[in-house]
Length: 176
Image (tube, rainbow, N blue to C red; front, side):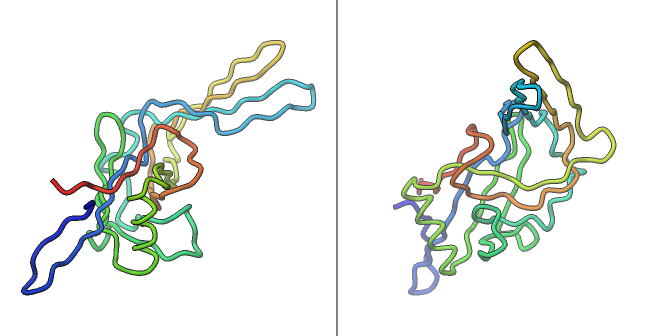
């Protein structure tokens, strides 16, 4: 059983708890590639620097969603305490007590069964020194790397089918 149970009078309530790592620090990922007008391959990479989310990052209105969709109701939120975010040495970890709605139950089941096991995040970088862009070029390709040093606003963390960062994780918490 992958839920927590606790007695409430004569009823047993099952909390749908999912945990994950939507942001992994110092892990480089390729966001996209294309050939430019000169025929050179342009590769655009991104990395989130360690500590990019800190106590100055606004997270109060951060929601947990599915695929960042505005068409599906969110299943947890920092503001009401159902979503907890913690920045640690390796990245940002989250714990969500998923709300008991049809959307929440469906999302929990997909995570519990291992169908959804990766995450993503929607954010805004700090206007001042929020990111650094470097590039390297040779005869065949241009590699552009953006390092995000500070995230000013974190809007959502999402269970996703196709993550930008494969290093993310998502799972239903096992009862201990």
